[in-house]
Length: 284
Length: 276
Image (tube, rainbow over all chains, first blue to last red; front, side, top):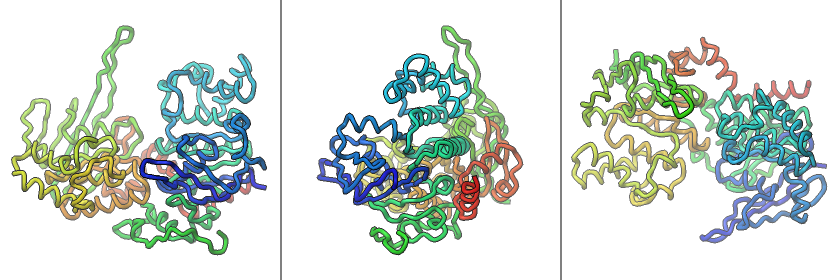
């Protein structure tokens, strides 16, 4: 049985201009130890569907799903208190902007230990020891000294490492990474991806990698879901997606990579006649 | 030999950080002696990580900032902004497009006014002609005349970057400095903007200095590539030379770090994973 199962998820936002459907009937599943990549452009609803799983959407959003289970438990019908026991502990999330997602008013150590206090019941010296261990695990030099630092004293790459340390602090079963390397340099991106993949393999975590970078998908994913305008276009394992994309949108996305440029011009999405009906042929 | 539009010789830029009550001041060497030459109609790409001085160099090339030492020639004329005497004609020749299209447009200024402002400041073109030229430029970058009276918030990121490019082209510059013009854009929009830049280069015989940290974009657009590392140009050559035979260790690290999206490398990765 899959660890996280979502069936027919729909997220609607109440806006001044009427209801806006950001996610429209998306189904997906992740098994233990599996890396699933969700690919799409901005506005394709890839982050929103994961925020719905985390329960982090604002009150203007209406989340509906035929099924949304984590480890066999229905998370939509859980009480908020019971849900908070899962969120942040068994399901953890890393966000896109590392510097913006840490609280500038507290030290890195305080923020790390807060998660440990909340979910693991660790206090004082025990919490501190675990925090040092975590910073070591994500490759931050001088972890003891770093615990006393504020986010602004660290670089973007280091802040992202702290975010990762915080996310894995409670040994989550599922890690959701929302564009974890978009704000970072290529060389740092490589380090962070290597770190995430190492941790994923060591702890046999399930991972959902949200990204718009096809290179990141190619380097990390086992299976890929392509999303466009809030709907799932195609789902395939990573090799068959890159070898033989089925949906025209996926084809367009792959040929827009400057790596694959053949002539003088890059093909763009508008060069392809795209119907936004999901691909439902064999294998999807 | 074709015409050299831009030449820089040993450009140095130091920033002095003043001392406070407790600390002594110090000097940051942002750019340490960079030389470059770009021919008319060609594209030079400058690659490097954040903090390596590539944007500082861009500011110097666009005459926003003065170099601490070194010489800058534009169209064969030496430029020195510290001593003044920079004519509007010189200013016109070099324009810049910034990275973030959300930050580089004034939210309270209509698109038409954005495009006409360079003309008001730098020339005495009559109002009707200003309007016509703005309209023409708008259609040239792939927008429509009805966008003239709209505000920046009504546009998407890709459209805003088109507006920023249109604004830079209003004065018919010969050199366009593009500071990470597509890094904030989605893949498909990125492709559209890169195509637009290629078309405009052909049409106006523009010379580009293209700053980026995305090697796949650089490989696509550049004629020559310069790799910067801690303020120094560690590698400088034609695109093919740099990509096929990188000399410096940093360039090699950069290539190794770029995610590869071809089927062969996915196969390799999966095989390695299954073996482990």
